[in-house]
Length: 138
Image (tube, rainbow, N blue to C red; front, top):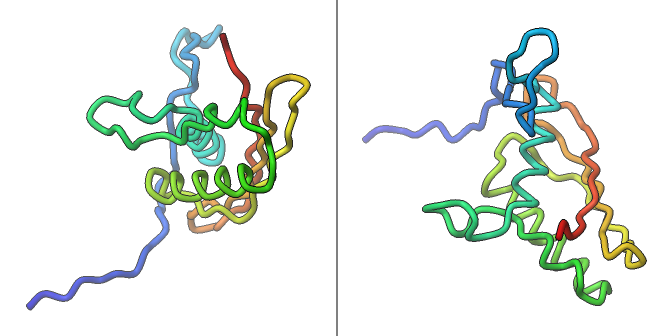
């Protein structure tokens, strides 16, 4: 019977991803690359802002946080958002561990300000903040 090593190890290679929205670099004329912390931050933001059902063949992918924009923002809605954020990142972004979530109601703009404190699981176990505003685009 084979034994399974269940210890989770941090990745030793640097993280990298394309910089969205794919604008050409003015000098190199190539698509810029985000690396390490910035790549992970971009990934977290994209996952949380993706609507569920938007990604083909994975209907549960995404945080669908825009669904909360026109809710009466109270402690119950805030708790639901917190739980959705934690569960979504636990399932789809294994590079981070959520340490703290702050949600500010910007009802005068029909928006929410989100600040996440996360630990990036790497050899350094760096802690960083990810901030963005959730608002309706159309």
